[in-house]
Image (cartoon, rainbow, N blue to C red; front, side):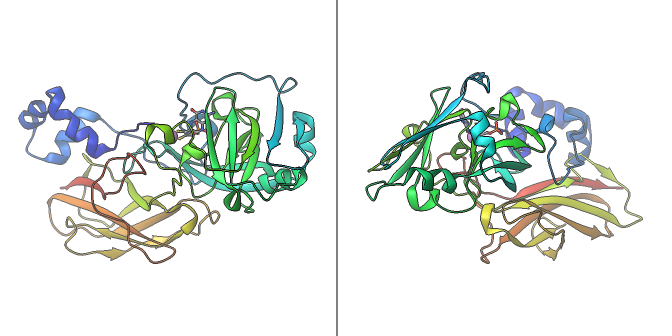
Length: 333
Ligand SMILES: Nc1nc2c(c(=O)[nH]1)N[C@H]1C(S)=C(S)[C@@H](COP(=O)(O)O)O[C@H]1N2
Ligand SMILES: [Mo]
């Protein structure tokens, strides 16, 4: 579940004794950083290649051969039934671009990615089973013993998928092969992988992470981060620089992203790229003409589609996702 933000990494350096290395090495905070951590990846594509997509599972992914896999729908339904892989692929197909983020992801962390998912609407399968009036929670059971659930009203909405392809290929083993749930707007834990059965029950269900105290609703919080430049970068101040990054607010979308080049004293509106879908992150950029030499603290904050500004309060991921602002500390020469 855990992915470290740069800020957390910076905090950790104290414990690792790296702080003293940092303090000896150079006059600029920015250049100290680059000496210790080197350069991270900064070219972020709007769609994340499968090989680069983060993987999270509480234990080793199970391998389910497609020709032996089945999906059963049972419980509070009038017509329980079982689908095999071939039958699943025969159902009406839907394509959706959805950003997936782990609830444990730090601000600007790596546990987030965007893919084009292909599958069947969950509603199509539930309708066929004829859900009874008693049904309250829809439980997704997985081959690794994992489970999570969604209330029936949520499960019947059009955006939910039983997905079997990711970016044009069958789901990779590490991303839920043969089939998984895609639940736009919810943190990753609701996107159950290696799906084997869907059970409807008349009362609330607590899944694998809920039993450990994590949020049941798990609605994505608004977040934004700078991909370029990064802390430790040394930049020339004699020409305009392009600051780039991403923002994500689940299914609420992103209305505005502001950037500060002076540690939050003043904020500037950035340019937003069109969102790939209603459920995806948004790329932004800002042209900056730095006029002053020395260290600069770049900060970013987003406003979601319903007009709420992201929270600047630094919190832990537990139990329902982090908040806090991302910063890049750069040196202008
Ligand atoms: N069966 C199963 N599904 C699971 C998990 C798991 O451990 N087992 N982990 C969840 C969590 S915490 C996340 S963040 C996402 C990650 O999906 P990904 O590995 O495709 O990025 O899968 C979710 N679905
Ligand atoms: Mo996660």
